[in-house]
Length: 264
Image 1 (cartoon, rainbow, N blue to C red):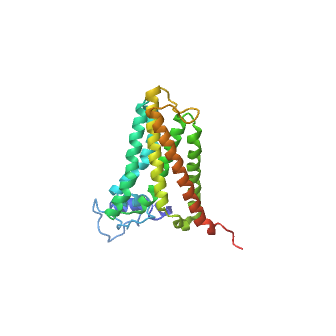
Image 2 (tube, rainbow, N blue to C red; image 1 turned 180 degrees about the vertical axis):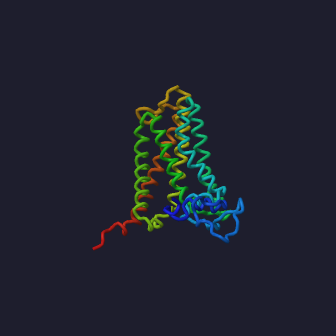
Image 3 (cartoon, helix red, strand yellow; image 1 turned 135 degrees about the horizontal axis):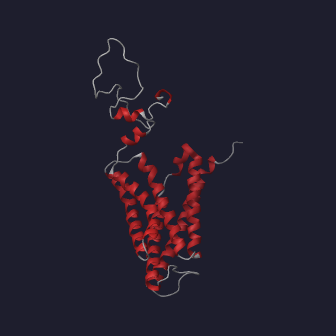
């Protein structure tokens, strides 16, 4: 059965650990050296990107890659907090988890450059983790803000841009390198994460102060309180982040435009 599989898919794992592959190789012939238990009958195979699970085993789990992976796993954890904890504890745990994950967004890239540990895995996963964090957090905030239109509008701009740019990169394929992350895009991500953290603070304070799970329902909150101030600041920051998000989306579209025209 092994002869019909793609070369180097599963056998790479056996080769990596020097394990004989069942069914692989010819039958013993007269004059062959006797089989010594524990000695592999196959030569070690070099691991490469097309070696399936063997490649995953060979990938270096550096500190930057671990931080990026943890940030990706923390993204759904923000929503899970509201399933297993009562409020306002869920708000505080979600805020702490989100802020901790946002901090790793700086350190993984910084450490990778400092220690010269840049990798394709990190380059691939870093923007995915950022987008997952932002999208899931905005979804949670929108639900617990009572569907506040002042939050829904910038959230719509952010989600639309992220989906649009991701689709644009997928369409460009090998030319996706044209849409490299710019300095303005990094500022956009920073503004989004700060705004989301402040909004989580506002929803938690609102629940503590009013005992209501819906902070700011019906519009921008007007009560002068810590929750209202935090929510006002968070909404201002999310609108600012949405503006940066729209600008970077337009910039990516402009760069990709020449490759979207049909040939004459």
